[in-house]
Amino acid sequence: MENRVMEILNTKYPMIQAPMTWITDAKLVAAVSNAGGLGVLGPNAGQDTLTSDPKETAERMRNEIRKTKELTNNSFAVNIISGGEERDKDNPYVIEIMKVALEENVKYFAVIGPEVNKNLFDTIKEHNGVIIFRPITPTPGIMREAEKAGADLLVATGYDEGGGLPSKALGTFTLVPTMVDSVNIPVLAAGGINDARGVKAALALGAEGVYIGTRFIATQEAPSSMETKEAIVRSGHEDMQFIGSGLRSIVTKQSEMIKEKYENNEDTSREVSGGFRIGMLEGRLDEGIVSVNTGIDIIKDIPTVEELIERLFENYKN
Ligand SMILES: Cc1cc2nc3c(=O)[nH]c(=O)nc-3n(C[C@H](O)[C@H](O)[C@H](O)COP(=O)(O)O)c2cc1C
Image (tube, rainbow, N blue to C red; front, side, top):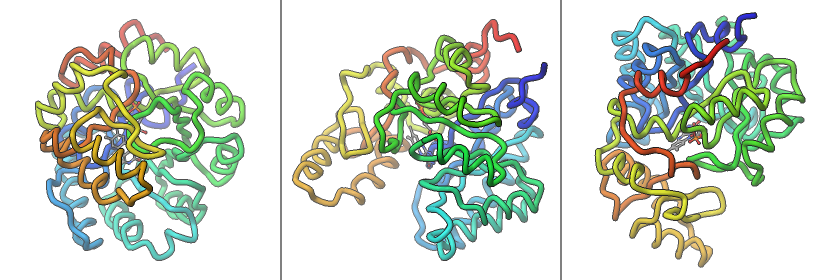
């Protein structure tokens, strides 16, 4: 039988490259889609400055969508950061980015959020789109609700992941079989998958595909600076610290400062959001943060995207 994820995504492998804000730009996304996975453009794809104008943000996304289409004929997705039905109603970022994505005929949407936004799902379905839904904190209840609301694929993210963490500290091994058993549509595993062993384990747990973020930062095509990529290669889990209740970073001067502020109950949101760009895109490690998964000990090199995907799926038999 064909793998359902490959069928839905129209890809060679059952793999989605997870969106990672500044890092997942047209070049990386197209490289993933050309190598047999589904690339996903993140919110600040292709940018090195922030704009607070939602229309400008959406126009920048339009450019990046067009660039991606120039670089690949294969399917790719756009990331939508949903706050749930009530909050999305007047969230100009969701409204403008959805408008542009639909105008540009994007068919695949990687939606993340704390809850299901049925209206958003309906809009995507009206345009014959495919919904990949990743609840921030996976539970059987939200998985079933998303399935009922029309999601095509679900992502179960374990606490091992890089980026913002789920509110429950359940590891990928615990979470994936539980989520797989709660729905009938395919589930992809996310969180700590960095090599072919991780892919095999995810499939053994019942996932029908994998959703991989951190590992793609240390590739040739990622726009992250070489300093950031090399920091990932030389670091391990012992070099990481919590800098908030839902975020880890490789230890840097700035992460130490953020941790201290967090422990004093001070607001760190500005330092955190700025820190991603400074630490992960620009590579000024002392002044930024580097958010990655807990499995980075096994990331030992900086391959091309194609080499990496071939390695992840070595001996893969559908
Ligand atoms: C640096 C970084 C930035 C991220 N930014 C986003 C984002 O903008 N949107 C999103 O949906 N998820 C974001 N994530 C989460 C990833 O999409 C994905 O869930 C996670 O990376 C999967 O786990 P892994 O890193 O262990 O492979 C980010 C993750 C990282 C590591």
